[in-house]
Length: 115
Length: 113
Picture 1 (cartoon, rainbow over the protein chains, first blue to last red):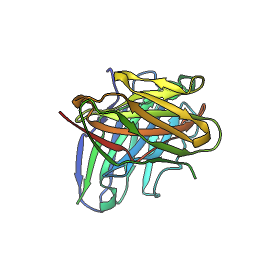
Picture 2: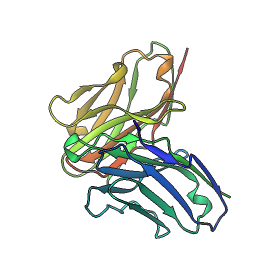
Picture 3: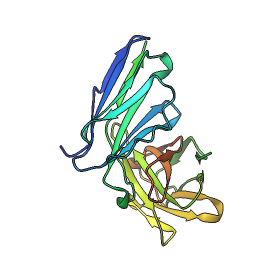
C-alpha cells in the first residue's frame, strides 16, 4: 500500500450509537495523527501517536472520544454515544519520524454523518 | 493559546492573476511551518514547508512562501495562477521537533478560466 488508508469511507449512524473509524498508516511511519474537518472549520487536531510514547490526547473534544494504536501500526478512533455535532470528516495522517520534520501524509478521510 | 489564522476564507481570481494568501500564527518557541493543499476530490498534500535557513521557501507548482518571524507570518504566493490551482489551502504550524500540528481554517481558491 502506497498511502494512508481509512475505512469506512462513509459512515451514517444514529444519534447515541458508537462508531469505530480505522486508519492504516504508511508502512514504517512511526507517527500517526487524527484530525476532524468540519465544514468551514479547517482541521481540528484530535490526537497523535509517536512510537511507543504515550499519545497526545489534548485535542480530543470529550471523553466520548478515544483512540488506540495497536502494534505501532493500525489505529482506531472510537466515538461513543455519537451526537449530531460529531458529524464531520475524520482524517488520519502519518509521518516517518520527528527528524523528518513532520511532513504528514493524509488519508482520504471517513465522512461521518450522525442522524 | 496556539492558533493559526488564515485571513481569507474564499478567494476568486482569474487565470494569470497573482496570488497571496495570508497566514499568521501564535505559537511559542521555534516553529516549523507548512502549507498543505487539497485539490477537489483528492487527499490533503504538502505544498511546501519551512524549517530553518532561507525564509523564502519554494514548493511545488510554482508556489512559494515567506516566513517573517517578526510578523509571525507565513504567506503563500504564486505570481500567476492557473485554473488547476483551484483548491483549498491550509496553513499549519508545529514546534520544531514536535508532532502536534495546528491547522488554519483553510482558504478556498477558485480560479476562473
